Amino acid sequence: MIDLTLAEVARLVGGRLHRATGDERVTGTVEFDSRAVGPGGLFVALPGERVDGHAFAPTAVAAGAAGVLASREVDAPAVIVEPIRGATVSEAAHDEGGAAVLVALQTLARAVVDRLDGLRVTGLTGSSGKTSTKDLVATLLELDGPTVAPPGSFNNELGHPWTVLRADPTTRHLVLELSARGPGHIASLCRVAPPRVGAVLNVGSAHLGEFGSRAAIAAAKGELVEALPASGVAVLGADDPVVAAMAGRTLARVVHAGRAAEAHVRAVDEVLDDEGRARFRLVTPVGEADVALGLRGAHQVDNALVAAAIALETTALTPGQVADALSAATPRSRWRMEVGERADGVKVLNDAYNANPESMRAALTTLAAMGGRHTAVLGPMAELGDDADAAHAELGRLAASTGLHRLVVVGEAARGVHEAARSAGLASDLVPDATAAVEAVHAEPGDVVLVKASRSAGLEKVAQALMDHRSGQRSTLAGKSGLASGEGAQ
Image 1 (spheres, rainbow, N blue to C red):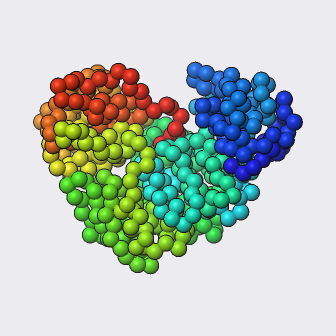
Image 2 (image 1 turned 60 degrees about the vertical axis):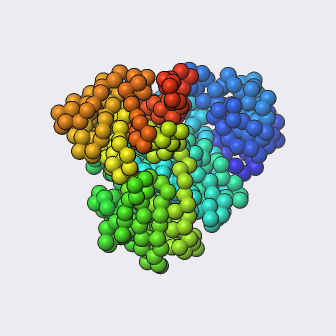
Image 3 (image 1 turned 180 degrees about the horizontal axis):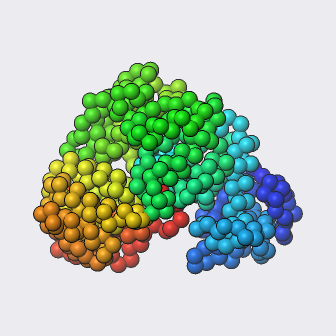
């Protein structure tokens, strides 16, 4: 973050000073976790599901924080913002005081962006693949200069400004992942950090239960390209007709990326090796180059093409440099097509961060391309609304068609997967929880085990327990825990 006094922070967010002279200087990072606060930081006191951040204000200041952003008086130097009466309380805000602090955080982020001359802001959204694509974009843009991007999926009304406030005067590129759980959410995030480049990857079934229709999802995702200036660039997935049609919703110049012959940045001569890694020829308006991805899955080609288009539009990198960097890229965000290999030769494909029908299909397709016998441990797909039963049944039929040796389905909510797979002739076990899932997997050397479900299922614990397995010992889930909530919507 840029260097600011508490008095400047108070003026920017419309707050008042409390137990502070105003001369205290914020020179470190802005944090909503008191354990992460360091010297010169600003602690953001938000109410949580179990604890209230205001209670940790003294601890944060003792750790070196210059002050606290809060909605009520605390035992520490602070900027106090008044609760917003009647505010719509989001998942991140929890109450009216939290809503006020969240708005103040967003206001501060916008003020910082406005002061950073030369900062290039890139935003990405889509129903699936956002985080992996964001990581690839950051990998490429780092070759051009200091780049800030969120870890994991910090993509909501809290994680977004938190990431923005990582930027400082040395930052050249700011890469942001934008999520939505309703209309207007992406537009609101764009006001926090106005993007010059915006990319929409795809429109699928994720959050169909919240939006009600794919058309409503498309309307929300398209808010990103609507926010772009006429001098900006919209990168659109060429293989999704709904996304390609968003060209009519933006004043920015449009670049299509995908496998379609008419795409400006496209892939040709694509093949998958027996590890599920894609090779292809990158074709661009300024040249061609060969790419050999280390990331697993044919769907990573779509992500790589969008990343390549963004890099070619925002830097002086050549197609050859882009191709080399894409080929060298490794996963940055956990539980997304992570491949681990045990000492006995069993491979575990951990894609347990989240799931929807499209990402399930991509994961099973990747598994089918890999050598050895295949087992899939699948859990429920959340937030599909009235389409949930049909989607789970279709997933079961798909699993049966991909040559799986064994299927383990976790949880009653995913029963439809189990029943459809068995009806299609695939051996399937329906188990109640993660512990039973680990017991049901009987992998042998050379086997590959895919683990995937929606975030709420917590199946990353299954993947970890399978990796921890040792010959002659039973795997255990004791002491395992999932990722803390709050990384954002998909």
